[in-house]
Length: 67
Image (cartoon, rainbow, N blue to C red; front, side, top):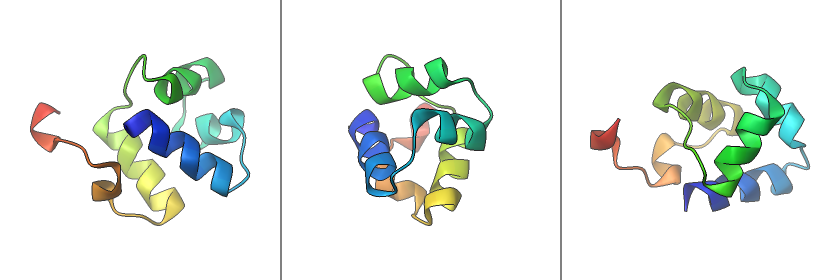
């Protein structure tokens, strides 16, 4: 679900994976893994993305107790 939302937001804003990787300070392949659901970004990276996209962290429907 997180992976799908990351991809949806990126597509809506017409951004590349590289664009978002630069925003959160990772390389493109790491960001690609987030969108594929292979790994999850840290809570801090999610917070940066939420600020960037101007959405609440809750938009990502995360269980914050696991972080």
